[in-house]
Image 1 (tube, rainbow, N blue to C red):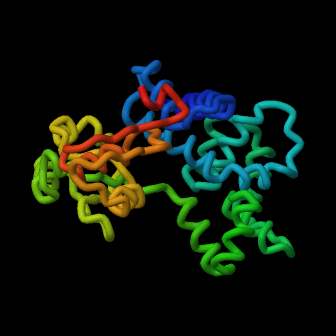
Image 2: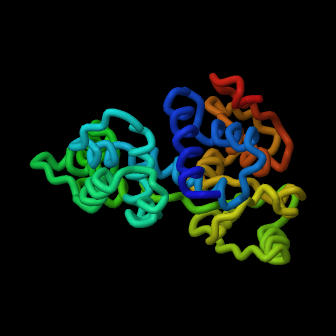
Length: 271
């Protein structure tokens, strides 16, 4: 698909996410289900660009603040995100005829400028696109150096991390099954049942997933379930369950014996 068409899809999706209170991943799933014609590369470009635009929202708004935009605001925002992430060049965008050369040059001039401010809170907030109140809290708790590291790490693309479902397979069995499908994995640093996948793929199409050998879950969530340390035959309340990832992790720790009550204020997530 042409870059201009892909950007058009991102613009449409960004407007959907911006106008809804539902999580971005849920809206992305609905968006793709309605557009079966999109190939895997197209879906990856659209999803990754959308997430990047959300991660860098405050920084992109700062970059665009000198521009007097009268129209196509979302398109300009998405193009600025792609230039900021170095995913596309000004030359390639000019060939597509998406925006004028003048606007593209103005955006390009701003993407490498690091915000400067006498207030360290505001500088870190603008640089990493975090709310000022959050940065101020972290500065008080961790100091400048650690706060900058924390913001930097939190604002990078998360790796694909799997939690091996020990009710169905051991970690080695899961790794071997994935290897037979041509997927290399790296053991997680802290979770004994965590595996990282270095390259971005659609893991839900894998036979290993269909066999129930793993769930997609970040390492921090895996560790939270372990810190709860539920025992078989326990009764556990997952009071903010969302999609139920931690409920499933605790079920494995409980060896499928006991009760877990998964609660959430959003019915569509419980469904």
